[in-house]
Length: 512
Ligand code: LAG
Ligand code: CA
Image (cartoon, rainbow, N blue to C red):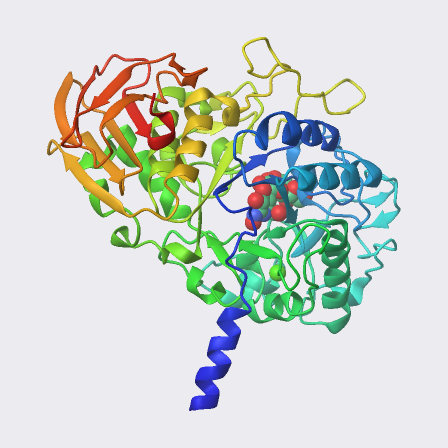
């Protein structure tokens, strides 16, 4: 019994919940489809100075090149080899990015596609991002190398070879997800190849991994792979530090597989978070912000210290994956900023911000027929650089949500209030709510259709504060609204339902 307890304790300790971010840096941003040279610049000029902890990058390994439709973003979810070359850049550019970002304390988290290779109909040839030969039909990927033995074709028990029933865990793990050739991760050889790929990235200096399609892999296989991973590169990380692991498991309830099966390996994506928050902020299904008082485990979410949370991701912002119509994105900018503001103010989970490119959304029969469109690119297929406008926003159709003042300032807010308890909740019984984080920060929302004028106990020291939503402190002056906290810790908040952003936030570093 004692031995069992010890084994359980050791098992959990070896799981990687710790994001390895620098102290006081509490969020990461997904720079979806960005080029490595642009990311290196962004680390130095923007992410480090503004307290971002790290970046989820798009898959860095070689992938299939698709031409029908033309170079969709999702070709990067179809690996051909573990060579480091993709539309984001080559190996030298990748190494340069990791080094430059690490040197300013902004760490890199790799989107690791290890459940599968390309689609079964991917054909044969050298239509791959480094020109490596492959033959999907015969399961031949000589650059790894993988051959027919290394796939689950014989293990899968469905007639089609595809996942047909999500209530059957065997199918979900051993059959093909949307025709993608499913790797036999129970094989020592395959585990070894995957671990070799991940260890190469670790030696270059990355801080962790997103495990794509984790639901489609057996937790035991993932455990065996993570047990083979090396500690992080001691050039930048303390000796003994292990890679952060967050696993993409879509569990909205009611399926054969649940997120808790993966807690022994690392954190897990909490997809209920964005789906529910979108419903509340849109005020669908009679939801009200009032109910957010018990947000977190109180809403049936997984334990906070296991959760990776986000308002939207690269899939559900365009109707792929899970979450449905309630998901908030940059297309609904006003509500989106409120949702991100709430997420970053609330202590639940480890937070990830989405940073997107714009595409011409086109709804036909409830589906965006342009959901495949890849990043802003030139006619030769190369990805366009992220350019900067005079007002610090991005050009070339890069949305750069992480540079929106309200979002950037809330990333800082979360850093400032890190470790402080959820406190001083107030609501009007409807959609006007407020809460604090100990005596370090306070946030107020007016998502009702009427004016708000209330005096609330903030818990903050007396003084004049700059609201970091309508503006920010610059050279000791406030470019937005000012909020005065009196000697009792109370402050008057007047927020119109017609304000550009109907919320306000103050923290001890925004004191004038
Ligand atoms: C993921 N998480 O578990 C990624 O977040 C998600 O973006 C990936 O799907 C998926 N798993 C596999 O890594 C994306 C697209 C799919 C696309 C797939 C492979 O959402 O639409 O499938 O990447 O590129 C596409 C077609 C399918 C086709 C398949 C193979 O949509 O119809 O069968 O390619 O040709
Ligand atoms: Ca699988």
